[in-house]
Each structure stands twice: as C-alpha cells, then as structure tokens.
Length: 145
Image 1 (cartoon, rainbow, N blue to C red):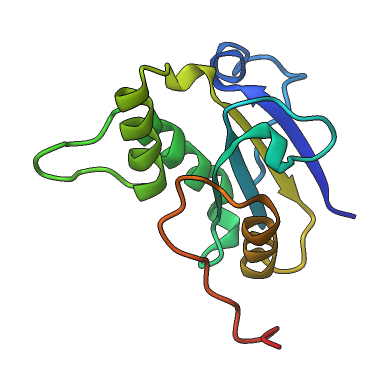
Image 2: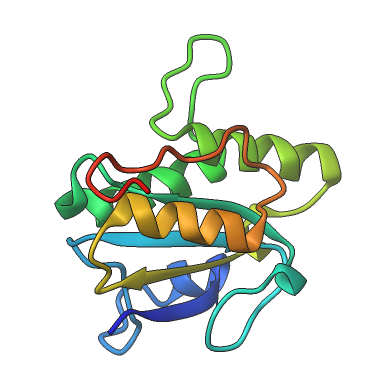
C-alpha cells in the first residue's frame, strides 16, 4: 500500500542525513512533493504545494532524482550555461530567491509502493494543483483512459 513519508523541512532532512532513523527516498518508483507548509499523513492543497514530480523514465533512480531536485533547489546550477539537472529544482530556487524564502525552509515528502510513477504523479498533480508547475504531467500509455 502506498503511504507518504514526511513532510520533512529540508534543513532538518539534510541535518539528519547520517541518522539511521531518518527516512530517506528509496531506489524504486516514487512521487515527491515540495510544499511551503507542513502536512499530516498526506499532502493537501492547504499545505501550499509548490511542486510535484517523479522519475517515471527510470524508477530505480528515484533517490538520485530527489537529490538532483535538492541540489538545484539550493542554487547549485549554472545560471548562464545551464548545468543543472532538475528544471523543477531551478524553478523552486528562482521562486525562493524572488520571494526571499530560504529553500531550506520548504518541506519535502515522497510516496513509494505505487504501481505506476507516471499515473501517481498525474494523480498527485491534479489533486494538489502545484503552484510552480509549468505543465501537466503526461499520462502513461499503458493506463490511459
């Protein structure tokens, strides 16, 4: 059964990166959300959802995808020659910069044990209406209705 982990304030998640008891994204299919406010049990629109994403192309690289998100959220990407790895992370950094928000104060959560990353990302996107999303995630070809 799919359950949500988090949310974790990004600064706390990074501070506890060596803590054996800190949940961490897995190398399997997953969906993640970034929000301005914390949530309980599962994210809601009341949490001011900024971004929803997954790694539908290579589900086993979900952990790396979340890492790329965090790196770019913190501004570790080239502004003139784009050397970043995550467009959503760059969008989040720009939003934080323009609104004087420290990205370390945003919340991150994720969900595993989902049958299809693409379907779960679209479902989360439609339910949560992330403010900074530039386009609606594509439907998967296998589960199209």
